[in-house]
Length: 121
Image 1 (cartoon, rainbow, N blue to C red):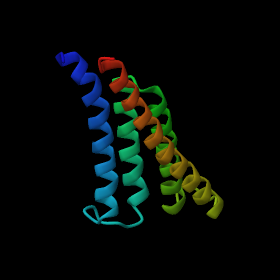
Image 2: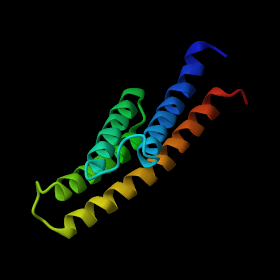
Image 3: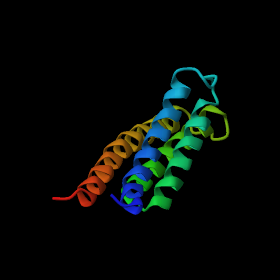
């Protein structure tokens, strides 16, 4: 297997593992969980979206961007920047949940597609 073919699989797999590990570390308490947690999650989702754009994964980039938008909306609502009340937190939570779940599915599909295209038939 050539280096470029291996890279086509390892880059999205590495991005997926790093983003999942970052979310998991925040949830497990490595980073103190407080009112700033949505902002930390927004930064993770934003970095994941940029990484997905860099490797050419359009659907994972879009869904990670939706998650980043949801986490940012929730962080702004909880932090008192927006005065929209509980509805903004709910919309942010729905967008973040939808974004993270669809990112997971789309990245697994993207990795599977790359594996199938690289593997000999």
